[in-house]
Image 1 (cartoon, rainbow, N blue to C red):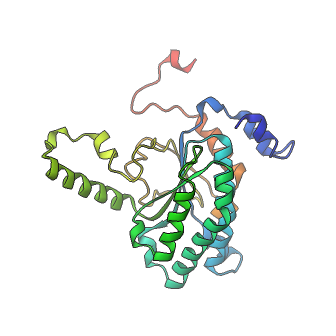
Image 2 (image 1 turned 90 degrees about the vertical axis):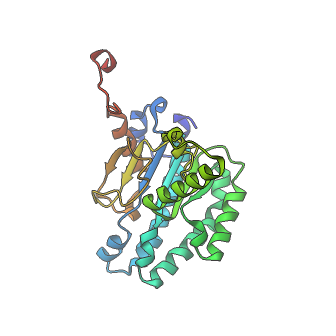
Image 3 (image 1 turned 60 degrees about the vertical axis):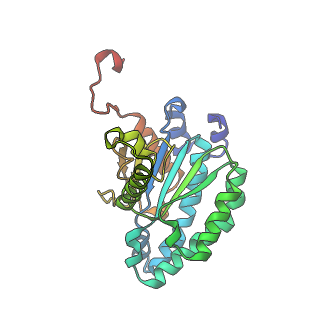
Length: 264
């Protein structure tokens, strides 16, 4: 996707157009991860039930996924349902699961048309069977797509992921007789749900909360964090572009220093 292609889908003279012209397409973040927060608050401010905030958030998912694909990002990961979210009222959990199935049915054609591969990260086996079936269908149908990899984190927790990785690594080590001294960071990374994917360069959190909520704890070690007060149902292409523009203004030193010559 070229800049010109993107400019054709944004209004002339709009803020989005200005933001697009500010982006260096040679320095895009490879992987953007998003903590989608604020659905309940959005609904409360409008004197609606919490589930209405979740419904409204579907439009934001659609806009962010399509924009990410058009920008040419490699990976987008959205935090949809955590292992802790089972503590919510059963009625709310049921609505969330129903909305997930509805999204996949409605958006599968769009994913295919935009060459987007869909993948689930998390403990999928603990989800309801009908939800699992819908998720597998989406993954199978988009398996041959070569554009954006769209991860949706479901029944996900960063500590749970590390625990699962350690269990599998230990089981394999016992089977193969691997020397513990040979275990290094790349090996551990190969046992994570995101094995083979670049780590997130940019972590976005909506609703203004300043925490990472047990999300991609291993992978975000050097991610740039961008927080916005915008509630998730109001988050749109403009806000994603703002995050990318801000990301490109930062110096990423990975614990080192930037020399004068590197700044030029």
